[in-house]
Amino acid sequence: MTTTGDIRPFRIAIPQADLDDLAARLTATRWPELPDVGWQRGVPVSYLRELVGYWRSGYDWRTHEAALNDIPQFVSDVDGQPLHFLHVRSPEPDATPLLLLHGWPGSFVEFLDTLGPLTAPRAHGGDPGDAFHLVVPSLPGFGFSAPLAGPGWGSERMAGALGQLMARLGYDRFGVQGGDTGSWVAPALGRQAPDRVIGVHVNALLTFPCGAEGELDGLTEVEQRRLESMAQYNDGYLQIQAKSPHTLAYGLQTRRPSSPGSWSTSSGSPTTPTTGCPTTPWTATACSPTSRSTG
Image 1 (spheres, rainbow, N blue to C red):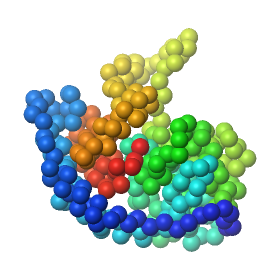
Image 2: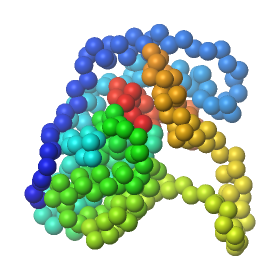
Image 3: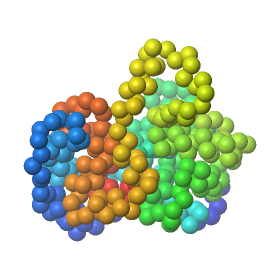
């Protein structure tokens, strides 16, 4: 592998003053008095109190920071935008390069449990022929690939930048996996570089009827029920993030870190949450000191 362009090593180093300030702001959270209606109107106060309590005193950032810094991380400027990424090479010389793309609300942390099995399947009881060299970026505007250099960073532009990054890393041919937001970027990259992308895999790809004649013909009874349930889907968060992101940013970038914590939890929460502090990828992002720069 031959790299080209400006690629710099990266280490996470959150200043202690920032951590102390975060803890103080979490402690000073002023909780509203709201009726107890469960999840019908958003995140319950009791649930968010538990999450904030865990974030303040149960989540050891330095332990997680050290673990993340054990993974090779880099940053490179592409199309005027800083791109942070993990680059984990397989010990297998014939491993296939693979780009892993996260969604929202999320981050590269979503893929941590897959790094070992995918790069070193032999050590995990798998076939060494299934090994991959992994590139796991923070999508533009997320985590350490922030702030955005400007508007216009949709899936097509993200795909173009990631294609440049893979070329810069010396990968002429590679596969792409994308979930949620990544499920839009991955196919875009396949369309832009069909001679380089050997395959695209997606998950959590949401598609909606577009009104074309006959598109709903032939739906099974189960599929019709699913379509009806989608009519009740609350996409308010998606609408304001897409159409008035700056207006929303003022509210989330206040002195109350519980605000982005609540927003991320509500937008990514399951329909019927379990009790206890959540351990899902979106709350892992919300609990990190870097959540202030995600999305």
